[in-house]
Image 1 (tube, rainbow, N blue to C red):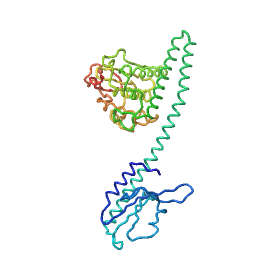
Image 2 (spheres, rainbow, N blue to C red):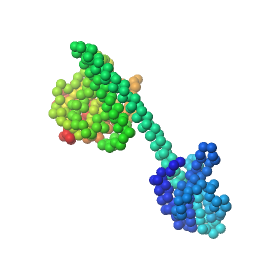
Image 3 (cartoon, helix red, strand yellow):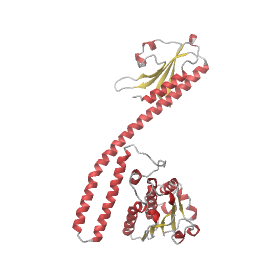
Length: 378
């Protein structure tokens, strides 16, 4: 195993901290080593004091050919696996080792074993990460050509359609989606480069391309438009009623701070849930108020008993029992909303909310994404 400089420095500090204690004159750390075609041995990794930089294996050290009462060996063991050994030399008379010295050396060997185990795990993880990064690069490279070809074929199809406006509109929507896929591919490419994360969101963080592009100025309207176009197309395909804002308030038309682009992710999550779990003939849509966004469906009302439970990680309500899903969407959506200074709730009674626009919205299930409107502006 190739040892990192940080690991070597750490183990040396541990040996140094024990040095000159109760007659100890020399501490040497060995790691188990087995090369293909040769027998297993123990390679010297670190020692105190650092008398020289010559690191030799146990087999090659002539001093160790002769036993000594002033020398003891302490195994570095992780469960049933022997990772290495700690060699201890003392100037004690007749090998009379105090019990407290033996206890402390056992504790040191356990600590060193943990360090070795962590270093092995770190190196294994790094190898896996590098392998996955290489695989991502290959997949990205392979995706570029078919994506470019799809766009080329779409443009040719537009030319052939001539004056068929309705069909051209569908093809152009396909081109918008192709462009969106391109953005996702670009985001995957950026994952292999250092990224400064603006929010400590956690392991469930979903990847939405705008989050990785902090230079681009964007408004709430621009952010939501492609999501709404997708929702409109989905509703048309399934013969659902679809509603989206007829006009956009001023706060949706100003450039927002980059950290607020997660709003698109929240809305996309909520609309996906609505299309997946609402009754087949239920109206779905989005409504804008002076204080936030409402994503609604007019299907079967979510029971009062599940109003809060649906935001728990892993919980799945009655409507989702027989359908695919992980129970993470609403948990993540609320988490993101709170981290940008907002909140997300399923409204039990919109009439109780201090928002006149909201009181006029009479739908069965209304998810209210309340936003810090004053803080949105760049």
